[in-house]
Image 1 (cartoon, one colour):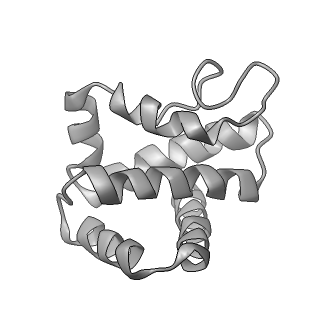
Image 2: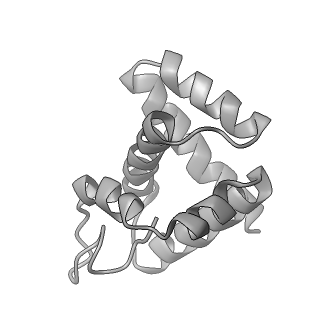
Length: 116
């Protein structure tokens, strides 16, 4: 997922979570496959995106909103490529909106902890 100014975040730093799906749909398929191939790659990619989001001033809630959009997209459009992704997908599918949002917060924290 790209958090570049012309995608999910505009020049003023305002979020456009509705653009997440478009950003994911336009991602190069081989790059997406590389990211999702193993869970460590996924966490590393997510950690880099979280760091970028922090650098442009997004708070944890804003990052969780974006993570929620990404997780929803992945659960609906991508086949899990490893057991960790399969578990996340299954948890996502059985969770209500509040629990999905909590899971998105946990994904943000997981990414933050793996970058330290």
